[in-house]
Length: 203
Image 1 (tube, rainbow, N blue to C red):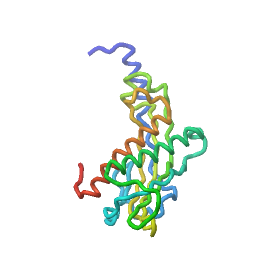
Image 2 (spheres, rainbow, N blue to C red):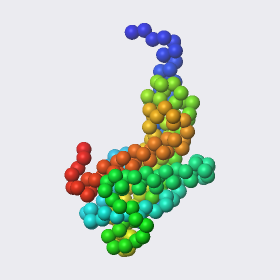
Image 3 (tube, rainbow, N blue to C red):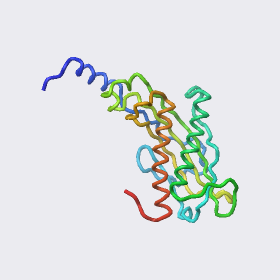
Image 4 (tube, rainbow, N blue to C red):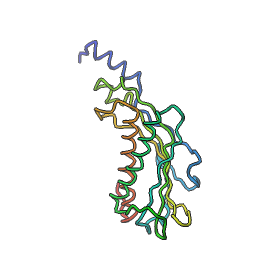
């Protein structure tokens, strides 16, 4: 097999720029109790109370920001927080929950925090070969907690990180990769929420 000089250069560049960025899991103090979390893999730890399946209505609080200053501009951070809340509401709605505004018996409250952002590097995404490797793709980390809206009892919690979608041809910014990571969280959340309600586990 013969390689052109350009192909060899590309291989060297790809090997040197690394893969998609995924912030490490960390505890920021946002969640009221981390002791119940069970590590699923290197980017997810979660807990779900057996009592959680009794709830069918949720309040989704505005997202808190715990990311380092300067990681995103004020405008981008505000947009990311709005997007994260909307993604969470979509996940709950698709799983059959009703979104409400007031605390009541049988209503759960969802608390969310954006805790870390891994910046993307747009120029590393230009060549298709580099994009396939995940080079330059940023990501984000989050923490979430579900509590009883009246008693404050913890019904579930998750600490999670994800990279953006490296195959998104329009994602050339950190914000775009952060939103992509949030979309992944929402898709996974919808699956797990349906499992919780139906008792049927999806592989």
